[in-house]
Length: 308
Image 1: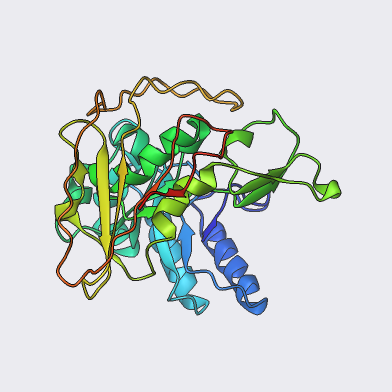
Image 2: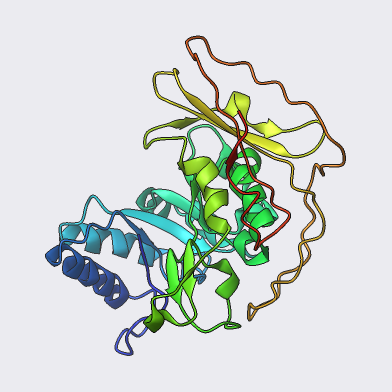
């Protein structure tokens, strides 16, 4: 996955043919160094993908440049940004048939926090929708745990990207509380810390395989608060359900970020213990239960424990 955050000075605009050729040349370099790139975000991180609401030529230019350089397999993710007031970045593309046809995946930042997707994004036959930059992790692990479930339940997002995998930086720098699975404040020493974030992801990644499918009928908000997301194997013989009952309060301000997030209300608050009944598919002979206590961002003792 590649996403430009800036361009060299000789690229006059992110919407120019120069920018499209620059990214295509970058893909050439990746290929020459045996790096496989499957997706490119357009046209620049958290910038409108179109020069104006009525001009999305840059999206088509990128597709043409990629194809001309032999990168037809590279898929375009757009707008790779927050949803701004209408007309939104995604709507600009959607309103241009040619630009829409050039985009393979809708990529929205932080849709798990704000539910900021257009209604047409979730209609049958729509392009895949990804949460192409997780923001919930900035708020702490319990919000990440909730977002990983609700991204699909509330917006049908089937992709969830969180970065970086590891980082070496001094403490108290912006965004240091979104590091997973490890960070090192003195990387030259060889010492590093494992974040609880990794266990929130493990509830989803340790019990599924590439190619598994989301099960919409078994993914929903719970009557007593919280939510459940379910994935199943293509042959239907295995399943994995992740349930979150994280208390829903106003989203706090990220302590070490250089931006401030507005308060976000979480619908369907968990207010009391409840019973969730899961009907096990025919042919499943054994069920395992794993649990994590999200009340602490630093105490790992209650994380990822097998209960049955």
